[in-house]
Image (cartoon, rainbow, N blue to C red; front, side, top):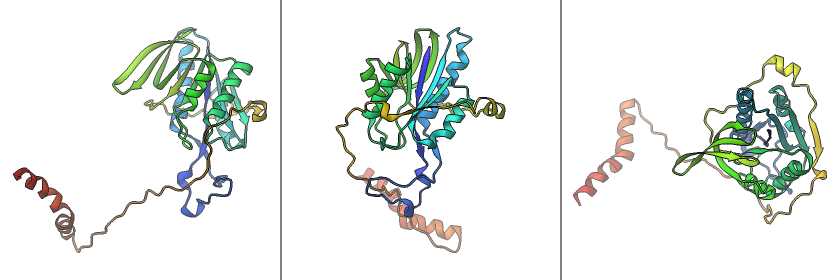
Length: 273
């Protein structure tokens, strides 16, 4: 069974100061000095794939894992880590274009890769990215491939060469169903799926394997109906009040008299009406 795990890397924009939030004429913010990281959904997808690989021998299902990202050279560190974790292949589709808000273009690249370059049985993706957060890429890829898609998957188990047991989160609880491949699986809030750390020995032995690099120019990008026209910073600051006082008791009295007394007494007054 061939499983392709698609992931994205994103800079830790939370570490940007207010002075760093400078949007240029191309609607870009300079994040070249920030370390690229995985979002939680993609991290879960990669770890779930590794867990399936661990179980493949016991259930006698040969498994081949491929990790793919559409990114610039900043993703190299993470790709080397995936090499050290013994992914069979790691692939970077070299792109310096702004694809943050173009899920259809990304889905079209993934579809062409699967249909024309490296046939797969399962396409595994995180539910959404840290930047863009459209939660559409997996759905669009499934539609283009003509494959069924299971969303909010939190656990995957191998059954045989052509079937998986997939547990997904629903509004009413959890749904466990047997799925025939090929299929697209979108990983949601999967518990306890932190990506493992490779040993130093594996880093030295496997981490130096070559990374397959392809150009985005080799793929035909689907047109988008949406166009990015503006960016603005969302401020999450909240107002606060500092309560002055010579002692904790005095501060507590001021807190009660000035802020809590009305909210405590109001329900009692309403009950008498």
